[in-house]
Length: 339
Image (cartoon, rainbow, N blue to C red; front, top):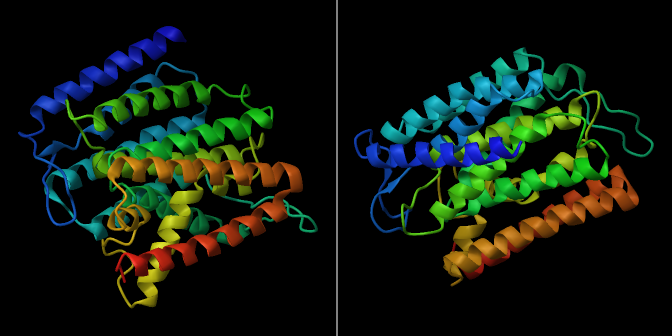
């Protein structure tokens, strides 16, 4: 497998540098404006290198049918999101595209069918609500990662945190070696780490773009579903929430605060956690470190609560932590004058 990992690194760099050179010609550049504070035009090509890398190696690795379906059908979302990066097709277009891609993958046989066991409640089967609930969860999490992509390294760092959480949950459940899907996941990890090296420097600096943040969030959503809903059940469904705690908390908090103020919940603004911290005077690097550390602590806390006390205390803890997070964001928003 070492040769695959070395090859994937080389291929990622070749693809990235090729698109870096042609990005001005295909209008894949992010220019500074009142919501985007950075120097010069930055190529929106990080998602291209990452997605092409996992797509290419999916043909050579013996991964599951479900994982292949997710990778292949995600190409539709990736291509349309790439077009959105280039010519800005709008929020409605993104949501319709995500909805259509969700239905295609659900049609291949992947969906959320049960929520697991909780103390006195046996395996909770959601029956007729399965398709609607799956679409809601996937679109919600996909946009959670897209919305939080506001400072260098944040979205990719949170994706990486979530992937490592999945690996840890599976490792403790003794299911890590039950599938070859993890081989492709390791290539995904390598691609994201290489992207971060470029994204966090000023030499050949690149951004994920919506094609990157949306596609990565979309693929991660389905990985969580596959690993929590398969017959092997790599880990309990409640741990899917603990693998993506901070992105879920952030988008839920922002939507609730927007609704309370009568604002369109899908309209971009500066109410996300990184915006609040920046307004409070925290610089970009410390903001990134603080949010990623918080994400790691939350994920580990949920993992420990689950394995020490069980699914029900874990679910209750998730909701209680969210209430505290919501209160904290409302308090800090007032301090930073974000209403």
